[in-house]
Length: 385
Ligand code: COS
Image (cartoon, rainbow, N blue to C red):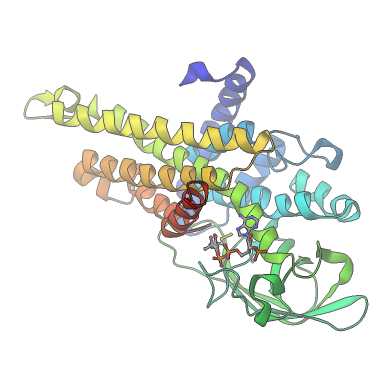
């Protein structure tokens, strides 16, 4: 696998890996145990210029391509899933939506502070009654003058929702129009009429912020609308298409962490007078973990390369996200099994990885939604008529 990377990519991996091991990993347990937002980790990412990695250099970012982003993001997730979730929501959802669909004026206004990490982003799509069925939004945007809209409604499970300064918010102006009645806005947290309520008690990625957001007569200028009225769902779906690549890479990162812990453990732990590594049953498990990990990484890299080449990648990013999250599930589950009782306690790394992994099969489209996307694409491509 390493041989498939260029010299620059290997250098990038080594640099981010060393950084993540020394600055992110030591804090990861603290964020988890205290349900504490990872501000110090974000400061470290800012110092490394990673907050705006994929934002073009003209807006203050590093201008990295998706293949490079995958390499860096895998290392961040390997070290700390809480930090990874916070970082990817900011960069691959929120900033990415402004980057792809904002006017030049909007990009100049919002992206530089997001690229530096001085202003954190969120992406508010999910609502209490619309998760997988994302176009069925109830948050209403009503044009009240030529210059402004009033937003009313609520969003739920929004990552960075309480902490973010800038939110990309999806609304409906006419529910009868379904996905064509949706509109996206960039909403600044300081705007009147916004209340955020942190949601506590998650199983994993416990330090990441998750919030409910209520819009109560929140006035947003027309100048903050992304695209035209009616473009909202298309914007959301197209950004999520790319962001699923980031999520796949995050899954590879958490799987890699579980794999490395397992490989180290079987070389130290003895049962019945022999090291675990000498037992074929354990060797077969490691072989399956290694194979699924590489397959997940390759699918992810392919979708990133398609994205970088400007080619369609809707099916391929769903495949990468689906496969990588399920491969990660397999790896963390086997890791806990290999560690036995030691893997079942809070102080064990694999216990946290087991909890942190689970969300990768749920957010940014459940595994079931990925299967819908893939099967629709396959049937379209292979239609007989
Ligand atoms: N890119 C651009 N446009 C897209 C698109 C995409 N990936 N997917 C759909 N669209 C467009 C379609 O072309 C269609 O437009 P027209 O009516 O003009 O033809 C419109 O959006 C509606 O598409 P479709 O009918 O396929 O939408 P569905 O309601 O059937 O929903 C799924 C499709 C389930 C795939 C979608 O709702 C989804 O991905 N849901 C999960 C959302 C999610 O990830 N939520 C988690 C949020 S955490 S950030």
